Amino acid sequence: MEEIVKGVLAGNRRSIARAITMAEDNTPEAQKLIAAIYPHTGKAHIIGLTGPGGSGKSTLIEKMVREYRREGKTVGVVAVDPSSPFTGGAFLGDRIRMQELSTDEGVFIRSMATRNYAGGIAKATKDAVKILDAAGKDIVLVETVGAGQSEVEIIKVAQSIVVIHAPGLGDDIQAIKAGLMEIADIFVVNKADRENADKAVMDIQAMLQLNNKETAWKPPILKTTALTGEGVSQLVKKLEEHRHFLEKEAERKKSLLRAEAELVEAVKEKIVNVVIDELKKEGKFEELLQKILDKKIDPSSAAEKLLSEKLKKAAHNA
Amino acid sequence: MQSKKKIRVLIAKPGLDSHDRGAKVVARALRDAGMEVIYTGLRQTPEQIVETALQEDVDVIGLSILSGAHKALFPRIMELLSQKGLTDVMVFAGGIIPEEDIAELKKIGIKEIFGPGTPTETIIKYVLENVPKRA
Image 1 (cartoon, rainbow over the protein chains, first blue to last red):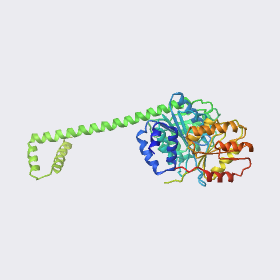
Image 2 (image 1 turned 45 degrees about the horizontal axis):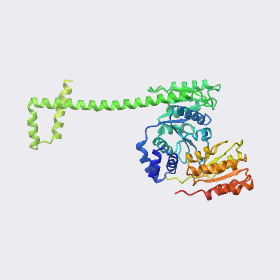
Image 3 (image 1 turned 30 degrees about the horizontal axis):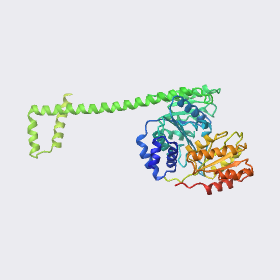
Image 4 (image 1 turned 90 degrees about the horizontal axis):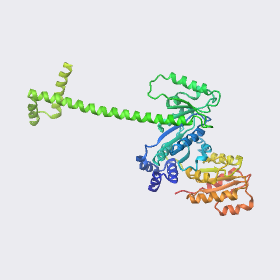
């Protein structure tokens, strides 16, 4: 197993493939493997792509990978398809649209069946993402079947979520029900060369306006035509923006925590000054110390007694 | 939850065939037998097929060919497999392959050849019985 861990960290494709299989088969060793690589994760931008079947996810992903490759970034793709609930078998055909990428050394594509897990995300998907991240991929794309509302599971895996839709796939409103609507960081109307594309955009816009919750990130709606690659570079740019937003957000949270620590420290200092100085001035400090030495009162109770008196006075003065 | 080891099969079409009905029938049959089948689509180079087998970590590869180019493409695939260390992957083939070529293909490591009209049950049974055991 150490061999595989080393291989994964070195970006060896065979090791990556084997590691993902271990995660899929959920062997006892898989847990150890994930634990071993975990410290090396956290560098990749993990992007989830979901939407109904026929919206052109695989084709769009193929074009996105090409765009990332042009920028010199390495990419991992995990394409999730459903397992049969009856036989447990699965037909994994998403690679068909990405086959030309197979021999690109900067790209690793893995098909994955949902096995017994509901929600369109196999448990192993999370591990596969970690493995690709640890293997040094700059971008990890996770494509899942558009099973509708149950797709929200993807939020547990990805940092940025793209919900893909296409005009003419039944009722536009139906396709973007609550779950998907809420998890999307970016909406894509693919197959934008079709005549109803603008209507699809407007439908999504209308749905978004009903959402009156104030959020710092407003999900944009982009139009793409995956077949020709139109709009794909804008999508990649938007994703980069979203990543920056997430980083800033994390930075802001860290700053908040730092501010809190400083404030608590400052308050402590002030209280000590106020209470102890006053005690000293009143000449009661030494008296109290003596009481503690004589075991008439313990330090903690003494402090409590003091504070309740002092704070009462402070509150009264305020 | 401990799940059972799944058999992963790559069904690939090397070369310039323009239809893949047979390959899809076999893929479907293996899927219905509970296997995870990765399908590559038409017109694959040996490099693409072997690289896909590697990334997908399959146990079995099924090659389907109708163009008559098997004598050129199959040896290349077997060579690449051994180059990449994928010697524990079982390879079978099907399609239009003349009787007299079979011995030669088996010599380079193709485990079995299924001609047109082979019942899918035969292929399923063969895969189940011959899938390499992994440590």
